[in-house]
Image (tube, rainbow, N blue to C red):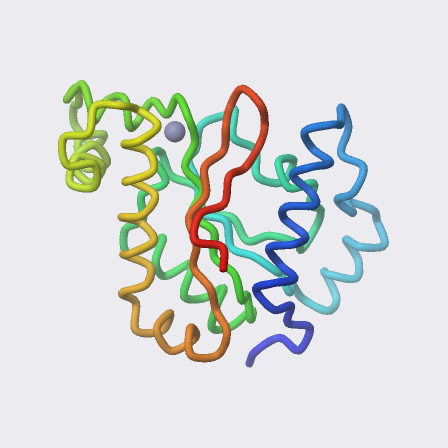
Length: 193
Ligand SMILES: [Zn+2]
């Protein structure tokens, strides 16, 4: 069952950009609703997040603050280097098919340690599966920010290859890339239109 309170991709992106502008200027989260009222409302009536954010686990990258969001606003998937495997893709498919999200943003960031490790080719054990995925994406690029951008688009492409995503794209879903700048707090959105 698709949630009835669906927000289209244009409006969802407007809210993210607006929230990010507030975040850059703020010391506290002035917009995201984390009130008891909102908590109880979403508890009883379910969630209808307006965007899916796929990003890195890096502690400097905090999606709910970066976009000034509150309870029920964004559906977040985080793994080091913003890679997605089967579990991540499954989470995205759930959000677009069952929760009605019309916007998926894959957000890389500057100074990404996972991308750095892929460039330096340093990895061990489980980390190696992440590094190999990023190395495949960056194809020898040595500049961290440029490599991060390539890595973002590799994840965008993986998401767009999902049959469920392809179907939802016909009904208004957008999958876009973005870069969070760890020094300024600014989110640069790619392929917005
Ligand atoms: Zn990172």
